[in-house]
Length: 484
Image 1 (cartoon, one colour):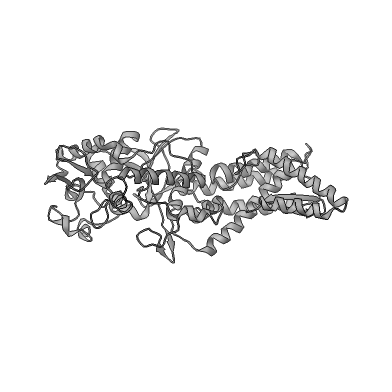
Image 2 (image 1 turned 60 degrees about the vertical axis):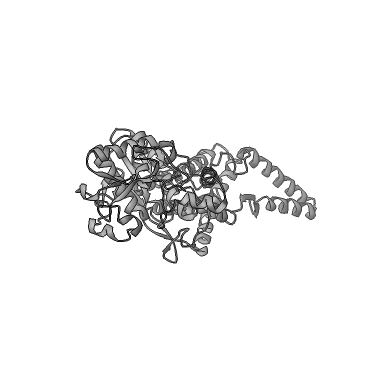
């Protein structure tokens, strides 16, 4: 089955056909960097990370662009979010930007989110935005009033095609302070005149000012991906006005489709209400990382289909923690047995089971990146792996390597939720060396028990437990795992 993507623009699943064979150009709306990221951001950017990972797994050369909004994203009061934060902290606006850009990438790194190929900032692309605004003015899609420039929504007969909103509906929520400048209530700012107290300001043909929020994505996606690119991603909460306005200004300026596939991520909710800073019902990623493993937070983010809402609660993430622990235990058990296995062909019949898991995994991921289905397949596989490895017959090294590789590809390379059996440990050490050291301590403990030196045996067990390594004494010896 070919990869199919639910295209929000067409409201149907469509077979994915890139513009250029073997290559995918993808743009995702990034964060406004005025505060710390919360778990809602984790859901969005982990979801798109899995999309990029899977496309690369399929062999595509992916160019992934994700912007950073550092100017122009206004509150309902008309204040720039970053300027208001700078005033609150008595700091320079770019101090605020740098602080939260670094924090954002620290959070994403912790969640094993691979960095975009390009992370352009709005403030670094003012000339491109001015050029596109001028094009819209020249073609009659925009107009200038008192140093500000607005897009005329009535000039675009397709306006509203993404969100299915009629132009008359754009009147709702329009701020009275700017209504008088506009020809139509739904018109939106491409460029805003900077009042004397406004710190972020640039020269333009219309006087000193700053760009509107929406124009940055249109200008930067064109610069790095061209007038038409393959996939545009974002959050469903930004379908209107942000994404709708992106399409309008891009397609009117370029006279070409903006993106062929539109993918929008459902919101993370708390008691069915969207998690957001403005409502105060958010959990910062940094705070969540103090309680939960990053792999568990990541697994929670993709435990629902990317396009669906996901409700957050302590219970939901606790349940995921246990589920992840079972997957990780199987990885650790595989690693343990690999350290002791011979090159026998015992267990060769299990290779067919692994091939089925890979095929099933591909089938569900080809169906619009169905990560809940992919996780379920891994959980089913893990039950069978545990049955095999806990059986009476010692499994040969070739089969153990196949098991390890399956976990690495499906759970590690694609979903990003499991450690590689032979990869570097999260502590920064070498996993193979670390495993041998643990095995050596287990041997020392076994000798202490033979000598009836139970105090020393308990000390070794407790010291390892303090490092997050749990020992389990079984009839065939002692196995160990990293505590989840």
